[in-house]
Image (cartoon, rainbow, N blue to C red; front, side, top):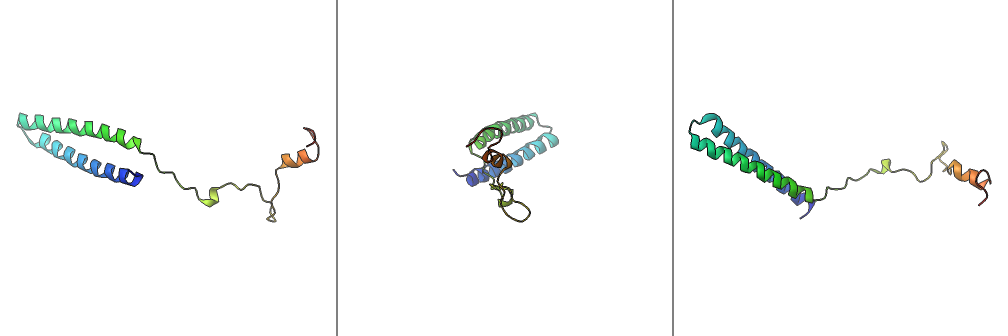
Length: 103
């Protein structure tokens, strides 16, 4: 199952669960019949159980990797104002033979 298929499945299931919860809520709010209220509460509880299982299933699908824009990619070497690439200062220092010995 691809990430798109998993997301579509989750979206459809969420819509069904929301509709079922709305119907159960309506029954509980507008009915005085204890049997209807009991069945509506059982349906609401089943929706919660389904939702918990769906969350676990959805967690198994890897999240899509966000594409990084090219402007966010670091440049391999910093550039000076004139557009020339400048090597890191530490590398120049090492080439000059200072501090840590010669190469």
